[in-house]
Length: 206
Ligand SMILES: [Zn+2]
Image (tube, rainbow, N blue to C red; front, side):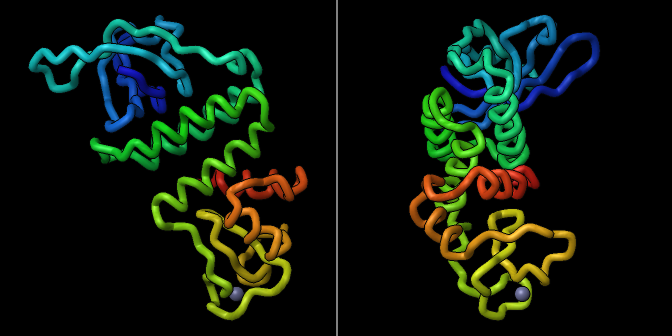
């Protein structure tokens, strides 16, 4: 079976619980002395077996790394791991999951080799919001419900508001540019500052 490691919980000794996103499941598996196992790290794609032995949590066995060239690049790896941690939190309390998540990660991991990691992340997030039916295309501010102006503030969940309606949010983005981005699912027309701004909002939580 293949999957992406999205979380690691340390137990007593060096044992761990590993969370893995597979094609159809969000798994939690037990691993003895897992901390000594260098392959087990958040963000990694692995091939593995599950050993069911009547215990509370099945065991993670026969792990093989399915590596990507970009994993040696600290920045790309860091961005990727941040996204996986957020996704781990987002999927907690679920067991059966649609194949969308695994496929989104599989595609993202390939694109990450060539593209700017911040752009890969915000584009994956738009796909996720769209898939979950949470993509907001509302022309009104989500706080006061009045019509948005030409410059908007974007916040967690990529919700749009008036600049003044969000305390402490000092940055704005051009409304049309933002809506083009979420409609297209491509960050091509955003400059690096705009991409960083949206990434910051993504990092607040998926
Ligand atoms: Zn408002």
